[in-house]
Image (tube, rainbow, N blue to C red; front, side, top):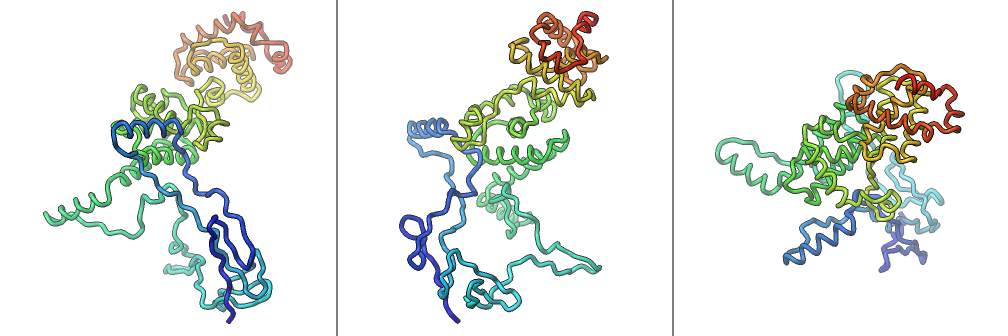
Length: 390
């Protein structure tokens, strides 16, 4: 049996094999998301230097596969190599010249053998898919010491000191995040982003002293923004039973730490999780329109009215919920739809008096909103309906 040549890494990180040199691998695909902002790193290092201590945050080495070692056939020297595994014979064969490079290889494929009593496939022995969120948090092989008398209690306390409770707290928070996201029908993308953000907050030891429920509420609020399904502070407060003040404090600190205040382009250049801007009325239009069962032409008109109101700077200083509700009332009135302010109030969560007040302000500037191009686009819109309703 012939031997094979294995390339080894050189001093500059590239591999050499048979006089050929291959460039080093690119950036690691396992790069840590939600990287700390440079400003926060400098502030924490300055505070640690002033106190005469080291940076308290752990600095884990990001995991990456070593791609600089490769197996090359010693006969044909094909690069890139074409090595095939023959599981039937247990051989490692060069696909170019047929030279056997190894024998007695281990079959690493999934085991689909049936161990059930009944007929049919039993893939239970294959195992579940890997979850990057659980990396380092759970161990498949471990020893648990049961509580049995004073000796068992002593051993259990010793085990807790060794293993720590941080990982268990993160796992409990993951379950809480998933439960809250499911209760308001948020998709999996939102829950995964919220879990990853919470894990980063705990691993970096940020927001120490804050309530866990407040941190969870802030991560869900940010995750909704990043997944383009924004929710209001009022909805998050009702979901988590946490005051708006505590959620706002955690939200502001997380924005600062991970550089989420920046625009999307600047955040991507720095390598942080992404920009998270303030919620505007346009972002809430689709949800409120769905709650009111508006048809497509009316929904498009509502969105165009909201865009025009934002571009003209009307209703400045009002909350996004109020602006969205007033735009819906304005657009549905123009389109001749009989939708009361009370129905919009129930869908948006703002009083009908506030909606009518903002609606009257929009009627005063109807010429700025209902431009000739908008009326040409929405042929069913009739400005005369505003006079009759007002």
